[in-house]
Image (cartoon, rainbow, N blue to C red):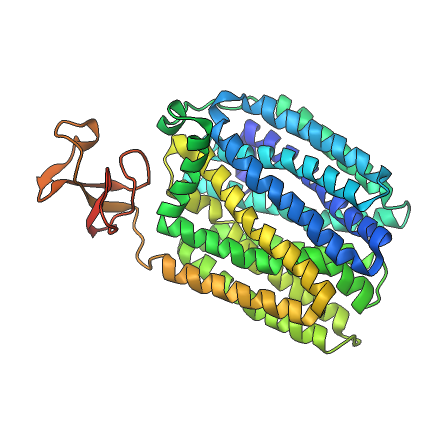
Length: 463
């Protein structure tokens, strides 16, 4: 897996991601403790609202950046966003009101909404080989897990020496280091896609969403993102109330609980490259999706029994299992997007997926916070478990069991001599040929759907 680090550009970007995420992990812990100090037992509601604001920034900003991807130098964009995040993090220790938290969180996360899809779209261009890209996805997942594993452990150590305010300062330093590494990296400047060459910004932003919605496996991916967000919201929103209030454990136990989630996720990410050589993305992701509601049911039962001597280790085990299942869904997601998208449309696809998947978190974050404050933790976990089960079931129904790359299809309206029909043969109703099928300007609908203008109709499929 580490062989991909021989690529200098990827190595610097990966390092930038690691240092930024370690800082983000420290800020996550510090924000939870700041909310608890300002709001006491209502900390879950404060965090739920703050994280909902984060998701609003992600949902609204990412598609616009995806539409403008070809007009902004990637290095300039990512470095500027790192500097913005550093400024917001440095200001957080000085807040005295809850509304100030919400304002700074929006600024910080708006910058992240511009940075992250740009980063995601750059990696498959730096590492075009499928094996290298798969390893890079696992490395990226591990980097995210540092936020939930090593940075909370570091936070626990730092909290024994200093107050949580200093964690925000370390976060700002992480973003500054990330900006320096990005500036030192030569990044590719891909040619704009046909969708970017024509039309207004709004039309280009909508294209990525239409691409995801028109592709069955990408619709299934979004359903699985909803299952992940349901389980993840329990971890990220309700851990502080569960650990500090329900189990009556000290502040240092909060990062340890989040670290258990990260440990499960990281272990799965390490195993996935080999597993995906023997199994399909669909099989791995759906099994993990259906595991999530089962684990949440176990978590609800654990919480309902009340504090026991074994409650703390059991909670760590359940949180690790949630992390493992979430990682098994999230890590292969980039492969599914890449498989389903033309190279020139990758920025729009990743931006749309980033936006829509975080729309799921926009639903589950406040749900986890407000339900916990209103009806209690056990019922909250059960409700989110039902949501995860519904989402996983929808994904299994949407994603065809037989899902080949190459599809034979019919073009009913392209004129003879069109460049796209170079290998096509005349058939009843149009021109028939087969190739790796993606939604683009020549293929507006998935084969098998009702044909329309420039639509493609399925004849048969083969591997």
